[in-house]
Length: 231
Image 1: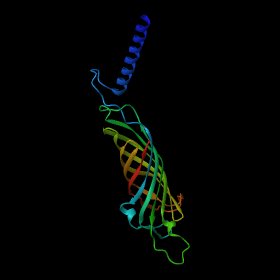
Image 2: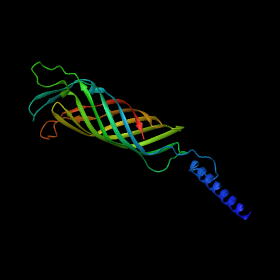
Image 3: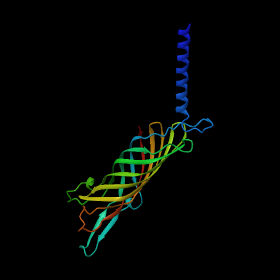
């Protein structure tokens, strides 16, 4: 009889402990009054995004650069950029606990690899040895900036971020660079599936990293609609 009482007591304690731990996990951040608090579903993780790049503003027109003294007089035509593609790999890093009853959390959006290109369709003379793809614009870079995520219901997340960009580029045998590009971004995601809307703006200096050459700054603004996954 004593043995049965002992086992019954142990079982009761274990059941109480498991129930208490589950309740604690579900009500993390609840008030001292014991009222129910929304669980924190906003978690750090990596992401992958793919989709089209749509040139905007001056990037979607011919941009003509005229070199003036002290450089030799010359005219360079950067042809109209047309639709291209984008691949982004990054990580959402959250700092500190959720706020507003776990509906809101702050962090950093770190895109470690941002590779993209846009096409162009120049009219080339019949005697040229260059191909049309030589006049396409190719980019690779990184982007970092503050992030706000809202979890309005269930596993639905809305991410808002503002990032500063660094880009290297190649176009028509010249390399270019940009260290002050900017991006405004919104993700809408449910579980691991996401759709992203991004507006990027800034300029690119195609002077082949040679400070003795004139500055060839052109606008590289673009809009992107990307599909992807957040793990």
